[in-house]
Length: 366
Image 1 (tube, one colour):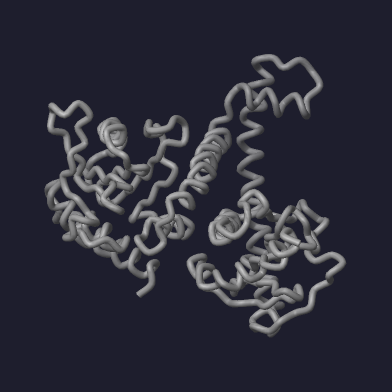
Image 2 (tube, rainbow, N blue to C red):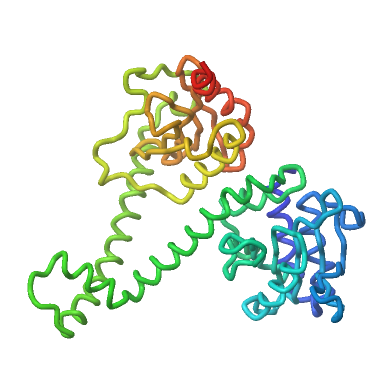
């Protein structure tokens, strides 16, 4: 089984057994130890997993973290465990104390169902107040599986995880802020939008009136976008030809390697496309500076290239079709399409992606 299958298998276990799990210790044994094993670590090998590791900063209280994941005799990840019914919001302060007292770069707070991953993006050696990644076995999202996989023993790369942690953290906070404004627009937000469409004096009555109008406009906009995406998907499925489903190569126009759709109003960049971009970026970052890896979205595909230059294509993600594909460009700028069933399968084409940028790296060194 691949990693995604293992995640889903453990999710089924959690769902089936949780009502029989009555204590924190039982939660550890039934859910959290299998989770650590799923990440590729031997829970019975003290060189890899240390239970009850001392995390007492002043060496007097005997405070211990439930589990410490080890590498080269140093902790790289701390895991603080609670009973599956516990609200994790009440326990992050405890993990913060342990984080400061250790050399670990990552802290995990979990009740066996939800896992919150923290690091020190704001201030070095001080655990951030908000996690950069949250994983919930009862509400699994595909992009989270890809991020979780980075913590697997076979793929663990601290610099790689940290490079995407900041983006994940701020994306999460921005999404939360946007969601809040959608459902309950703040007075400042209402005033900003009202000024753009209303020329009169913005009184309290006008503010109240536009607050409701903005709420309804947001709801209408979301419905329009969903309807449009659904219609595109249906049309694509109905009109898909054999070329869309083949692995054959297609010649591209080298004068304009990536043709960006001018009708940008119809372009919707999805969360899945952004996560696909982060996966490609994490694969390539050891070969080329991560800031050089950029993207542009189009109606029919999501393009990734180097230096914000459409003459330097890397790949295209075809996620708007019924059958997902990744198209990778070779040294001759010919695109070869590969069908994929999930974001996880992008990792199967690491070598092809690295090869696709070799020509740009060689040119830099000339």
